[in-house]
Amino acid sequence: MKKTDFGNLILFENEDYIVVNKPPYLSTLEDRHEAQNILYLAKMHIPDAQVCHRLDKETSGCLIIAKHPAAYRNTAIQFEDRKVNKIYHAVVDGIHEYKDTLVERGIIATTKGIARVNNLKGKPATTYFTTLRTYFAHSLIECRPITGRLHQIRVHLAYLKSPICGDELYGGKPLYLSSLKKRFNLKKDTEESPIMQRVSLHAYSIGFKGMNEERIEVSAPYPKDFAVLIKQLEKNK
Image (cartoon, rainbow, N blue to C red; front, side, top):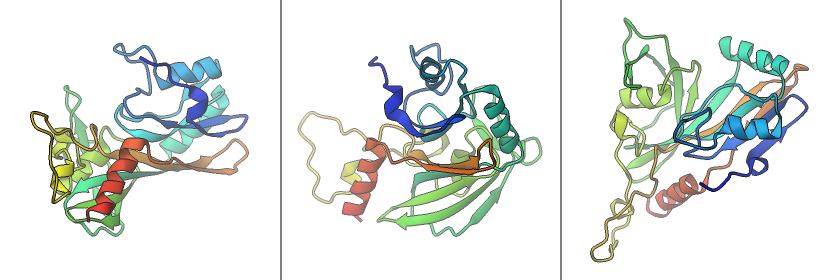
């Protein structure tokens, strides 16, 4: 595996924090199947680095890294108090018109690492959804999770019957160019691949307070695969 250049991932840096744009397919923490991960790369850059939260392996976007223990504690308190503003973008199946649509449904994690909506036994989970764009048969949704449960956005969107494209675990279907283009010709004896090979979810922005109470707001540009998906949806709407 080609070594990731940590410097190229940095979106914001001061004496206390780094915010990176995590690439898809790179784990936040140690993964026995991978030689590198965000924490490993961060520690090569700053030995005392600690990751302040985590993103699913397939999810790209904003990730906060603390440079020292006091900075880590500062954000840990903010996460606990629900004071960190997180915004994700997701491409979902179907046309949906959400405007600050609130989903308050408890989430329980199974032993197989799959999450389910369960108001009786699950941990409280809250997410707001707003439609940014609609296309021919898909929507681009802004997701604002207030809590941070396992697969929360994915589970809550599935609950709204608008599963994320490519999220087959929760009922989302892969999105193929042939379903968007009227005149699509696949080469003979070849199998079509989805436009995006992963769950269409990106941690678009994050906001929190720094060590001196200053507000830090960072947004992450779409990675190539997500940008290509949006471009194709725009072209074929």
